[in-house]
Amino acid sequence: QVQLVESGGGLVQAGGSLRLSCAVSTRTFSQLAMGWFRQSPGKERELIACITSRTGGSQYYADSAQGRFTISRDNAKNTVSLQMNGLKPEDTAVYYCAATRVYGNFFVGSGVMDHWGKGALVTVVS
Picture 1 (spheres, rainbow, N blue to C red):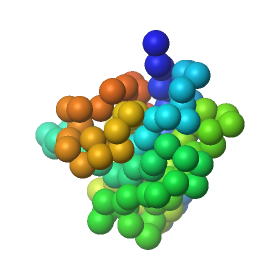
Picture 2 (picture 1 turned 180 degrees about the vertical axis):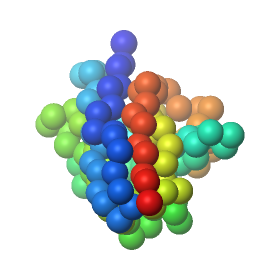
Picture 3 (picture 1 turned 90 degrees about the vertical axis):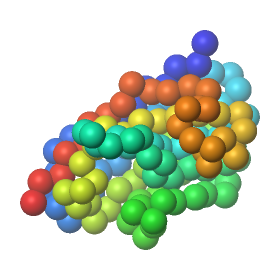
Picture 4 (picture 1 turned 90 degrees about the horizontal axis):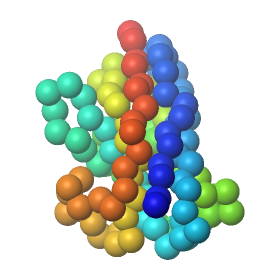
């Protein structure tokens, strides 16, 4: 059974940085495309960034994350990270790590992800 555990959330002032990490328990991590979604109260879960299965693989960023967030993965450690810089109050949300065997699923919608973490709360105050 694949388990995803996020860490690194917290409270930060606007303009600050946070790094989220997701530890994945599976022997087939290198076969999984990974990504980060977020969800704010009253809003749908939205894709923030995703990366193909290879370490250093192709990445995608939502417009809201482009230039501020960086997704990376380490297949030797079964981890995926999201470095968030220049945080804004509108980045406040629960951030979820997600995994799928098919990278294209990230562009179909959150409903087709194979595995989810429980989420990490990020609160950005001005």
